[in-house]
Amino acid sequence: MARRLPIPWLLFAAFCLASAGPVFRSPCELLPVGTGHPVQATSRSFTVLSGCASRGTAGLPQEVHIINLRGRLPEGPGNAPPESIYPAVGNPSTA
Image (cartoon, rainbow, N blue to C red; front, side, top):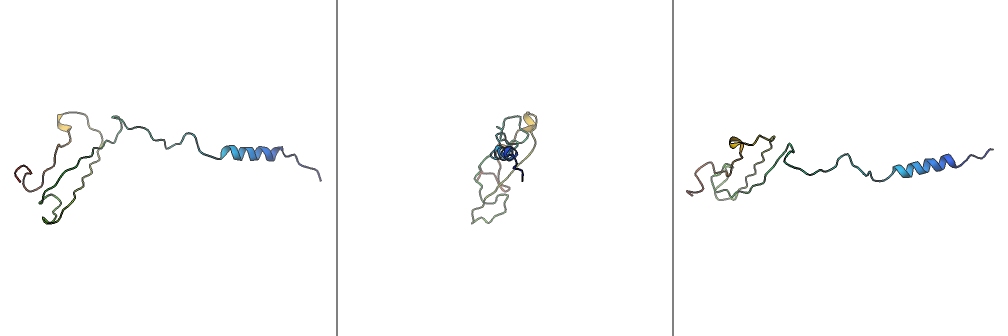
């Protein structure tokens, strides 16, 4: 029986070892988010008094989470986000 050359097997093994391992450039690369990114978010914290929009019991502490996702609007006086949110009943400055 004729002896086969080991070169094809060595090339196959080298190819398998060369193709295994981490990919140097991932298709899901994280890039920094700048002002041109289509989704912008801000984080604000508010202290809510009793009688707030959550309709919670006045004796129990309640949390209100508001998430607002929207596209980027052109800058202008009418497109500014609200500076504060007041309870549905009453004004916090009079409480």
